[in-house]
Every structure is written in C-alpha cells, then in structure tokens.
Image 1 (cartoon, one colour):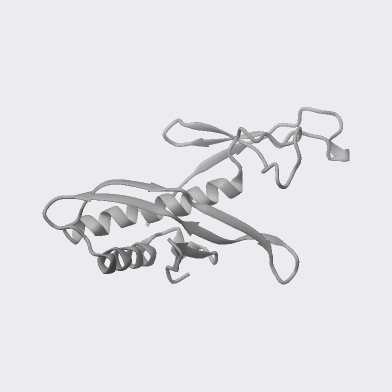
Image 2: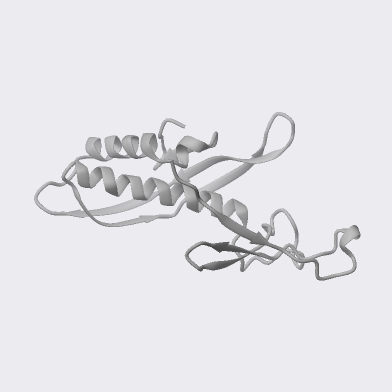
Length: 157
C-alpha cells in the first residue's frame, strides 16, 4: 500500500565502547529533509551517555500514537460535520516490565483538549464515539499491542 522510511545514524566517539562508556546520541533523517537529534532515554541510560535534550524512542512512540489518533480524530469529526478548531494532547506513556522482565511501553494515555465551533457542536457521547472511531482507524494503534486510553476511558486497546 505505502512505504515509510527513516534513516538512523550513529557513530562511536570514544575508545571506551566495550566498557559501555559511549554516547547514545544519534540522528533520525526523513525523506522530506528533516533531521532530528535523538538519544536513548536518560531513564534507561544515564547522562552523559544519553542526552535528555534529544528525542528518545519512547517519547517518539508516545508522540506517534498521539499524532495518529489526533489526525484520525479530526478527520472523522469533520466527516461527521463537527468543525474542530484546535486539538492539544499531553500524552503520557508508561513503561513497565512484561512477564519475562523486559521493559515495554505498556500504556499510553491520551489527554486531548479539543475546541469546536460552528452550528453543530458534539455532545459528550459524540466525542466518545469520535475517539472510538479514531482509535479503530488509527494506523499506529492498529500496529501496536500497547493499551491506549483516552481521557481516562479505555479506547479499545
């Protein structure tokens, strides 16, 4: 159907690699020309071997889920006749250990604040239904086993 590419680049910058003393800073480059500074999470690898100013894979995962849900939500809302003026989400991901003791992002909570205008404003039931549709149709949500919750309500994760 479609292909999505990213180029990830890292280079050793210290002779102490085998002792685990090396920077995890790297770059993510995308087909549109954007390059993003990335690193391991400082909650996984301590500073100075990680850089908290750079995006880490866990943050990117949470952002990807939130972004996909938002894009799908505003699409389905528009199709239902609701005019969305703004959408802001303070999404949070939680890392826990699975049955084998391996850490994973087990839960992402979306906390959207959405503003509407126009003649047709959604009821609370409409908003819940729109989140349900967005979750069902979001490419990323359909690609992960992580539980995704919207505003304290499970969105069929």
